[in-house]
Structures are given as C-alpha cells and as structure tokens.
Image (cartoon, rainbow, N blue to C red; front, side):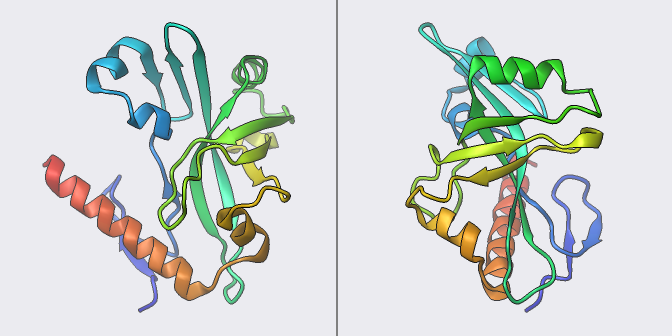
Amino acid sequence: MNIEKYICSRCGQEHEDWPALAFSSPTQYNNLSDDEKREIGKIGSDLCVINYSDQTDRFIRCVLFLKVNDHCEDLQYGLWVSLSEKSFQDYKDNFDNPDHEAMYFGWLSSTLLDYDDTCGIPTTIFTKKGSQRSEIVPHKDFEHQFVTDYYNGITKEEAERRIRKMLEIAASFNKNVD
C-alpha cells in the first residue's frame, strides 16, 4: 500500500505526499511529570528549556532528511537536538534573522521508533537562510543503526511502514485525547 494521501493529525485535512514524522517535544521534556513540565519546563514550537536545580537543558527543533533509495522523495523527520548554552543563545538571538547561517554541535534528543536509544547521537546542526528550520546531520563516525540508515538510505517500503506506524500512533493518541 502506497502512502499517497493521509489525514493530518494537526489540521484534520487530507494531504498528498508523505508527511514529516514530527515530534512536538524532546524526549527529556516528555519524561517530565505534568507538575515538572509546569514548574521547570518551557516549550514552544521551536524552542524548549528545562531548568533543573543543578543544570539547564536547551533544545531546538530541526529537520532531518533520511534518504529513500528507491523513491524520489526523502523521509523527513522533525526532531529535537540539545545545544550548549552559547549555541542556544546564538540560535535564539538570530531566530528571526533570515540571513543568519551557522553550524552548531548538538545531541539528538528525540526517541525514534524502530531504533535502540537515539537520544545522545552526536549531530551537526546547519541553520538555513530564509528562516527555514535548521537541518540535522548525524556524525558519520558514530556507530548506530540510525546513523547507518542516514548515510546508506532506506527503502520506500520501509519509509511507508514508518509513516503508517506514526499515523496510527497519532490517530490513537488523538482518539484518547477527545
């Protein structure tokens, strides 16, 4: 079964082509209790900060394009990465600057289905001109199946299986929320 049309869990409308497999928050934020989210967490659509008593964790939302070898479209992920205080501040200071280009080191902070722990994969984040969401590139020398898949690609069948799985999870979540 090809994924050509789907109902968006965000807007409820039917769309064509593949949806991005997006995460609305980093795993570290998801792991907080509801009280902790209110007391020490702050999250928006692109930035997240968690102020623990002994440290502050800072995250940005980015995109990652996973090559699909036998298809003309890549599988797009909307993922979170953690940044150092200095990099986060630079990113935040230039968030609305359409001419800003920078490179940051960050740690992947999203738990991806089908992989062993993906949090903590080292990455380089590339900001893009025109206020586009920054792009994540995992470090090639880090041994992890997700990194291997990033550099070698996956099949169209595998990409569509992942999309179906995420759409099923989103539909189940939305049904439980209603």
